[in-house]
Length: 107
Length: 127
Image (cartoon, each protein chain N blue to C red):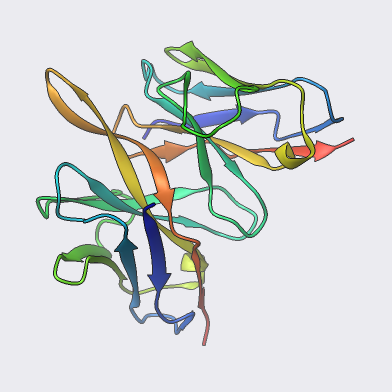
């Protein structure tokens, strides 16, 4: 299985900050990478797919980049509703695997 | 707007079988190209993909669970279901059903990302 390693596991930030979350794949996954946001008690919600394509309805302050094995989710101008956990997911190789998650907390 | 809803027992005894159903509204599990998956998440932990069923009825299972998992579909009810046998406490988790959106190129269709999710169903394995 492809291992997806996220860092950091948690980050403290303030409203208005820019936050960067990294995701590293154990093998080249080309551009088969998606990012999800999950709030407590809720299902994950897709933010970005194919590395950098913004899901319909997702604010443009969310952006993704990277290729191969190293990927980044950037949240610009952090808003109160952005405090949540974020997961990456690869779909290049069977089986689908997810990163361990990054929790964005209020500083 | 597509909606998915999990249903089933919230408590299962060890060694017994976990059974959940996902009811889909606002879309058909049998139309076009679509993939319908089960994913689980133990409390405070990450997400684990369990398996999927295609529009055609073909299935894929995570090798880590393959010997215990069956996913089936009922097109007349627009539902798909999960059966997980011989459960232990390690199977305690929130179970989600989700639609997997596809990516298309000249080579064909490929599952890509999960765009619609159910709200999740907590299943506890305990005697």
